[in-house]
Length: 233
Ligand SMILES: Nc1ncnc2c1ncn2[C@@H]1O[C@H](COP(=O)(O)OP(=O)(O)OP(=O)(O)O)[C@@H](O)[C@H]1O
Ligand SMILES: [Mg+2]
Image 1: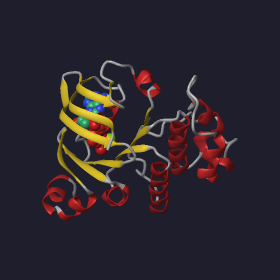
Image 2: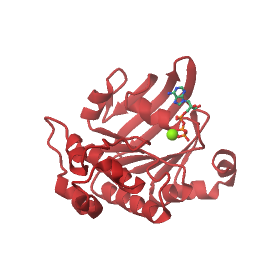
Image 3: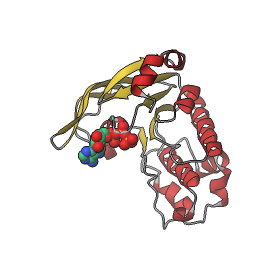
Image 4: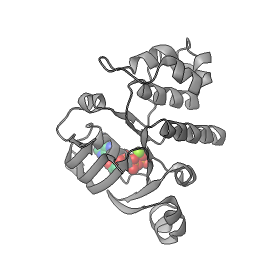
């Protein structure tokens, strides 16, 4: 197996506050890997650090190359995609304009606008609509598609199902699996155990800034102690 993304002994800080205490995590080529954990344990900080948006020490290897010290836009250009938790769209621009903004200059994408519209017919219907008037689920799809337009090899997606109706949650799970089948590796930050166990090949559980469990979905299902201590409320 080829590692796409390897975080080693990652420490991260907000000013003087030390939030990540040596995170080790690997996403191999073609895998969906989930990062689980309760509120505030550092899941978002982990992906922001990998994206160069939070100061970190340790090592972040992406396709074998060290990312520590690079700027966020440089990391994105190497093919690491990030879908933040706050549905980062341009509300007054149309759906189509938002998608076009996701393209990267000088990088030929494997994806076209038409691919996005085929994958999410709802976006085609709303292509000329200002993105800000769409539902939460539609905005989530748009954010994901805008990242795809930049042709990432791996996407880190932070709580894509938060606040979505159960039917839409299933749809998001389906699309993530479809992306994996098209060769994209995925690091999924989730709080919903069911979807993570359903679509991931491996899962990590984070507690207080470090990884406390690593295994297959089956291993996590069998491990009541870890679930009780680190996941269930
Ligand atoms: N910009 C920031 N400045 C200072 N502290 C922050 C900042 N962002 C997050 N923190 C703190 O860092 C810790 C980890 O936050 P993080 O956002 O990584 O958690 P999380 O696991 O993603 O949880 P959730 O998404 O449920 O909030 C928390 O204690 C949080 O309060
Ligand atoms: Mg978070």
